[in-house]
Image 1 (tube, rainbow, N blue to C red):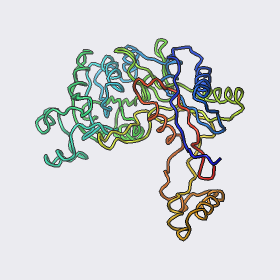
Image 2 (image 1 turned 180 degrees about the vertical axis):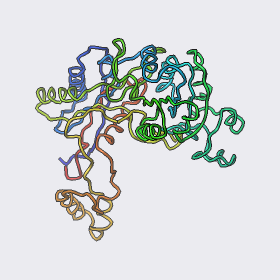
Image 3 (image 1 turned 60 degrees about the horizontal axis):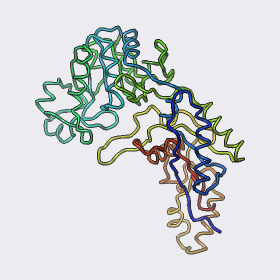
Image 4 (image 1 turned 135 degrees about the vertical axis):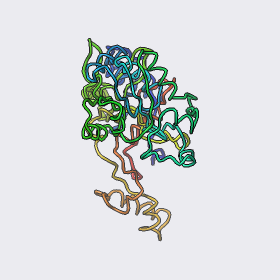
Length: 395
């Protein structure tokens, strides 16, 4: 019988993961038990994905506020430090900021505006227009920002992040000065020691700062990139991708985990005879059209994946074929023509027939599907099992 279902994404429940757990065995067992419970079978080219959170937890990859403070002080001098372009997030940045402030005497906090890097808004573009403020060139003091725009609370969390971050710094015993600007070099008017906290534009910010005469420049990826007094760390991403664990600790992005995805793949092959693809995923790469927030606060969507997930989709746009190449066909003749075109498609790079298909990496597309399936709350499904993703109209 012809199959009537294409891609299926299932959230898989598993035990609560703790440090030292055999995560590969837990993943394989959980997926196979779910398949047996729901009455379906594993197939070749299934995708099994594991959220970065449980990978880091199994690794025990945590860092304390004190460890962050010690690293910041060693690398940036412990005096006045410019902290520029942080995202506005209690989960992502508040505990990091505590550690940073604990390692400094004064912080000059420079916030990008009208929004942070991922779209959390400090002021609307309409209000900037009304006030005749140019965000590309104008530098605002806290006093001017408050005079022009008053208090601005996040539409979802209802937090005034300007006040919230200022209070956090003061609670750690450091002075704080807040300014608003979008050129990283502005901070050098206040201090030559800078921690740039942007995620996806960090390389440019570092380059501009060094070129403009900064004495010490670090990114979030340079803090906690080695263990401090036995703490966790991330050699590649440092504090990037970290999340609040407790009021005094963060869970870091998982360390090298390519061996994990290969081990999970091998275990599935051994137990089922099927070659599945495996990946670790974090934030999806998509944007909320209402809140205007871009989800990707992690440095990458997937820090590790098996070889079969490399590359981008190679797909035909069916509606293009139906409306152009085969506009004179219908019914079974149209179906047969499209199936033949799919079977003979070859490499579609640059082809008009692929126009409108999503030009993104497979890991970013699948990781976004996984993130939406697992959610970020209490669903209890940190493992995702996807079937049929690589199928097409001919399967």
